[in-house]
Amino acid sequence: MKKSLLYIPLLSMLLLASCNEEATPENKKKDEQSAQVEENAEQIESNEEQQKIDGDAESQEEAETVEQIPQYELNPKTFSIQPIGDADPKVVLLTIDDAPDKRALDMAKILKQLDAPAIFFVNGHFIATDEKKAILKEIHDMGFAIGNHTKTHADLKTLSEDEQREEIVSVNDMVEGIIGERPRFFRAPFGMNTDFSKTLAMNEGMLVMNWSYGYDFEKEYMTKEKIADIMVNTELLRNGSNLLMHDRDWTADALEEIVNGLRDKGYGFVDPDLIKGLDDGHQGE
Image (cartoon, rainbow, N blue to C red):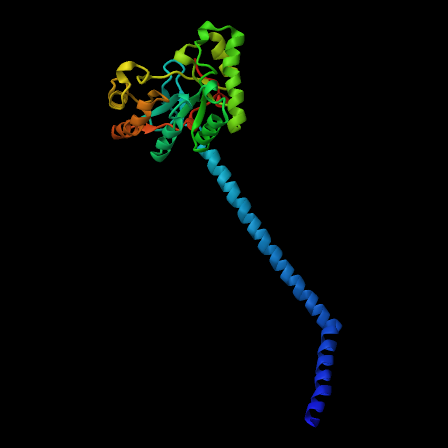
């Protein structure tokens, strides 16, 4: 019992000494210095991390800038795709008209799986519902370019200038409202442009684009087998061909065979983002 009583004062003295030691100006200064060193280290680490993030973002931005340098241009007379500089000349451009009518999303998924870029030309009457707007956005979010194919697929040569304006500009407005950007490409129904529609498209920042060949709107080729064969084996196929297809069941069913058949012949596929646009210089005459 006496030994226990002796421990109590001793313990109190040790605690007091410890408190006194912590409270001395010298120890307080040491603690402040340690805290400052730790804070500086954390700040350095934070700065390094931010520099890494900034560097990664800058590298990504530079990479994207490099990727967007035009490698091809549209021939305004033949509407074929021509290489710029050393770009691969043995390529074709895939385009899908009348989207999104029936199978556009299926076609986009097939092309995405095959790593084959394309332009989907849309009609305004096909993106009037929330469901179709969602489909268009999904196609765009998959990386495909969206083109303007007019509001109602009317023959522009039968319309007044005001009616032509409505057919073209209203679609640009609708597309921008859905995907956040306006189309860079315009294709008139039946390939029937007017002087007014061509000027208007140019003023809207769009390349006017027709095609090199297409068959799926002809009754003879409205089967999977027929359209797959003619799109790959036509005598019209050559470097830079601008291939016209439509949002149709038979074309959708044949699409994988068409893409693989063109690849088997050595053709690559032009990324529409690499086609020189009006912002890069006006089309030649």
